Length: 332
Image 1: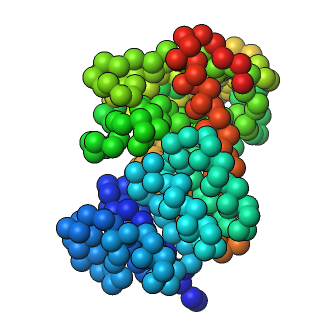
Image 2 (image 1 turned 180 degrees about the vertical axis):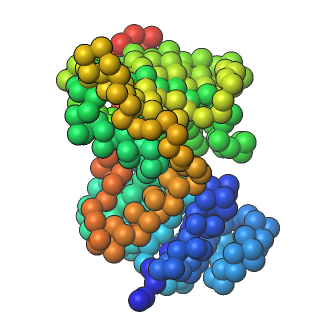
Image 3 (image 1 turned 90 degrees about the vertical axis):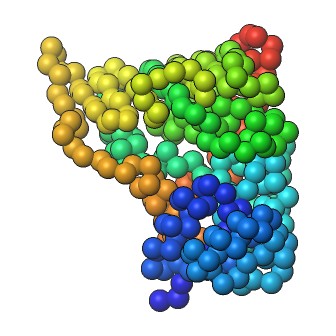
């Protein structure tokens, strides 16, 4: 069976810790080329993973390498230009979240994907966690009844210490772009993407200047459901992971760890055994995401977390920041 040839653009932490180790273990995949402007990093990473073709930038890779699809794992402000070049050449893409720094750039990428008949997956890895997929199946089966409220939060250190990460012009925003957008996407996915009615947000700068390091807010949907969230790089927490609780008319479920209960009269029925072990969920989410990407570009199934989905998330992000700036609730 022929292998799918993948190019990787950007060899920072997510590429080194996630993409490359996973891709090298997939039998039907070959990493044919990588691009990275940092020469020392380029040489050390290609040596470690035995990658023969290396380039100092994405343009030289695009002109000289043979590949079927590419992964963009560069600073967010570079996503648009790289994506448009690759889509113009008819290449399918996986773009690490967020898709771009602005809604306008996200639309340009999505339009280019449609124009060139390319598939674009945006890296919302929380959707691909086994426990999240199991929870969504419980929601869709009606075990919890009608979902009216999701409460979620994520308090941890920022995902990168690089200077661009806390510059709004480069990252698009602070903790809401780093942690929040993944939580919002997960919550709306669990609710089957209802239309959003309004948002209300307050953001804080405890240890940062150019972008927010803490944010709390409320997202109201047109079907009556509410998402309450808090995300922070600066607040203190006993754990370093996210939490999410789903409340329905007939039951309640939580993630991280996964628990689910259904109420029948005065009794509480456990839907997921509490002893059920789910290890290495972070790694497994990326494994599932990359396998989905490979399968979708090979036509095995439709794209999950598409560039069109990402445009909708960016519309939400625009409204969230507008609410924070105006200090009032904003209608969508």
